[in-house]
Amino acid sequence: MVADFPQVDQRAAVCHAQWRKKHPSAKESTLQIRTQKTHTAGNIELLRDEILDGRKYRIAPVVGLLEGVHNKEFVSYDEIAVFPEAWSGRPLPINHPSDDNGQPITANSPKVMQSSVVGFLFNVVAREDLRGISGELWIDVDKAASVPGGTEALEKINSGEGLEVSTAYYTFTDNVPGEWMNTKSGKAEAIDGTQT
Image (tube, rainbow, N blue to C red; front, side, top):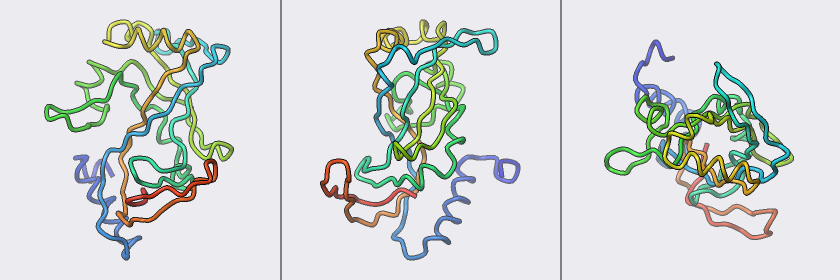
């Protein structure tokens, strides 16, 4: 697909058109970056060090995304679990990357990689027991020391305090309002749409 459509907006348009064919009765959908906050496990026994390309990485387990209502939109486990391997290798920035107007942008750019990416997300798997995905944060120790906030992030992980992280991803949303019954809380949660 990249050879046929070299620009990311072209590929997004093709994917959107295919989604619209699959969901003809849905209201107009949007393709947007979504962010979901979660936490690293605050258990220092699960931390380890690895060498990758001659660089030392601190590895910490993380739950990247769980089924539920996020940003007033429902995300199902079935959608999360479709292709969890696609999350592996994604960059790990400190703070949310944004453009000059404050709009969220992908961390997959040379500028963001240079200025705020301290590692990567690897070994992502779908976990039915969590109804979400989990994986490992691979944090380049030397790079973290040179990026604002990187040292503090490593200190929190190393102390077992855990770390709040965000998962940013592109999604289609059908914009059909409704509600989702949260089986953990027993409460219905209002939604503005479903991510697909």
